[in-house]
Image (tube, rainbow, N blue to C red):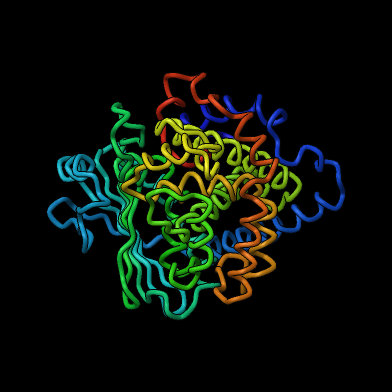
Length: 410
C-alpha cells in the first residue's frame, strides 16, 4: 500500500505499537474470530467490488470545465462551519472548476472540484480517479438509501492545503477550524456537501454522505442513547451521537476502500483481508491516540472523564469545553473504534442494512447495551494507557495534528 505523506508518518509511528497495544491479539489465531471478522469484511468487499465493476462498465466521465467567471458556489458559502481563512484562500486562488455529472435511477449527482493551479488543470486524470472513487460509494449509497433522501445532490470539493491542528493557546476552545473539514446542507429535494480541505477528504466525504443519505439517526429518535452518554460523560456538549456513528463508519470504510484500491488484482480477497486488518488496526490505535491528545489538551485524562464522584475529576469535567462535536468525534468514536469488530457485528445484526441505523425501541436499547460493554472495557482502558503520550514522541507532526483518520492512500 502506498500511503500519502502525512498518513505514512502516522502509520510508521503506529506500527511498533500494533502488537503491543493490539485489540484482538489473543484472538488472532482463533478460527471463530477470524471467520467472523472476515465475514464482515466480505460484506464490505462485495459492495465495493460491485460498485467498482458498475462504474467501470456503466459510467463514462461527463466533465465540464468551468472558467473563473462562471464558477458555481454553494447555496450556503461561509458561516460557522467554513473557516474564513480557508474561504478567503479559495476566493483568491480558484481558477477553474471541473464539473462531473452522474445519474443513478431517479437521483442526480454533481461533483464540482475547485482548481487553483494550471498544473492541476493539466492533470485531469487525477480528478477522474477521484470521481470514480466517489461514484463507487454513491452507487453503494443509492442501493441502501431510503426514499426520503435528497433526489439531487451537489458536492463542492476544494482541496486546499489547510490542515487541522491544535490551537497554540491551551485556553482556546476547540471549534471548527481545529476539527472540521466539511459541512452538509439540504432538504428532501436537493442536498449539498461542501469539503474545504484536502486532508482526509475521502474519509470526510463518506462521513457527510452518512448524513445526506440518512444512514445515521436523528438524536430525538435515540433519546436513551443520548441520556446514557450524558450519564457517563457529564460534560458541556451537544451530545450529537449521530456524529460518532457517522464518523466511526467513515473511518472503517475509508480503511476498507483504501485496502480495496491498493489491490493490483481486485479479485484478490486474501490480500484485501490482509490490508483491511492492518489498516483497521492502524485506525483503532490512531483513534485512541487522538482521544488521549484531545483530553490532554484540556488537561484531562480518560479517567477524569469517567471517574464520577471524585472531587478533582468533577472539577476537571466542568472545565471541558467544545464548540464543535469534539466529544462525538474523538471520545465516543474512539470508544467504538477500539472494538470495530463488534461495532460491525452489531450493525450487521441490528440494522435493516449494515450501514443504516434502524431506530426502534429494541435497537436503541441494544445499542445502549453495546456502549455499556465498551465504556469501561479492559481492552479500551489498556489501549488508552498503552497509547498515552505516544503523540509526544513526534513533535513535528503528531503532537499537533487533529485529523481523525490515519489511513490515506496516494
